[in-house]
Image (cartoon, rainbow, N blue to C red; front, side, top):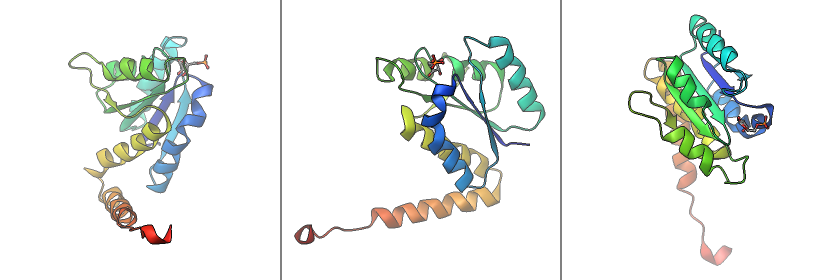
Length: 162
Ligand code: RP5
């Protein structure tokens, strides 16, 4: 039973999501990824969300490019948290997808992360933080990651040695 359902609109989106999968794996969080287009496979998307909820999915991550309605449609179909990743496959560099994902009407929230692979990694981190609210083991891993990250940020570079 996966804890996180990642849904993207096309197989062409999968490479941009690798960082999301890597982050979830690093936290030891179970996930499954599905390619289901909100525009091309609306009925299948509706059915999938119902099945995912029945199997215990706790957070949905939706990723799409162009007129990226997938995360918003996920949020219309579930009361679980939805994280949206705008992807940058189109001629507008992802601004089109960003606007589509972030500009949700009141009452249908999508927690929108950055465009592309940086956003994909943050979707994994944000999902972990949501789970950490009720899962002590995940909370410990989130804390450990933050500590490691802070250590890295403390590195000082001597300008004379560069
Ligand atoms: C969106 O259209 C997908 O999420 C993808 O980012 C974009 C292009 O899809 P393909 O034409 O590559 O299937 O729905």
